[in-house]
Length: 254
Image 1 (cartoon, helix red, strand yellow):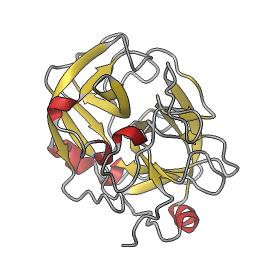
Image 2 (cartoon, one colour):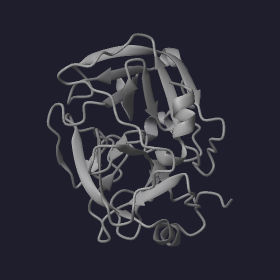
Image 3 (cartoon, helix red, strand yellow):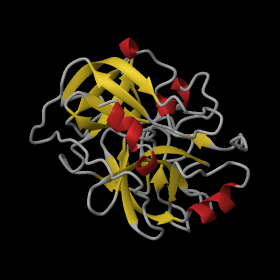
Image 4 (tube, one colour):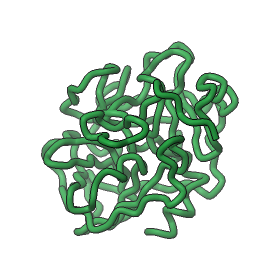
């Protein structure tokens, strides 16, 4: 498998991506709008030493899923999970993490199999602002042209290190895997990934959004923010972990 080119970045905040082969995407949404409280009741902020570095998705009271590349540089004792709030720094419910389980097939060079399961030290019950995501059926693969929506606290402009105070969202069409592969050339877009973007650019996930959700029109969690070339650049779609091909790993660790 061809290595991911150096210009391709993952979507975790760079300051916290020490040692990562691919720099993760940071903390907000480019070209998006403000999300309402409870609109994404399953989204969580992952933080270390009080700083947000990735998003995640609450799938039951004791489990969060996120990108593997958000998980390999930290031990469970170093991170916190915050749910039920529009602001990553305050509000809602914050708990610790007891265990981080990275997909054993994760490849940091290619970002393939980019998913991890985090077991929480304390449970997070459902409430008026907290809910659990609906996982896709095995084999689910969003159709090209269908609209998907992602949300996060990532940067709103490429290269920025400033996090927005509140949660943002953006909707974009799915791009065929063949088209996405042609855009990225040597950087393999595998069947464990799918792509989404406007052809003209301008809307995308960005640094700090890594590990956060992307859902279909029915609200089913189809993927996690994974990697891309810059943010919202024309001709380079955002790339997402495809949960339809990875859900067996998730289910085995719930």
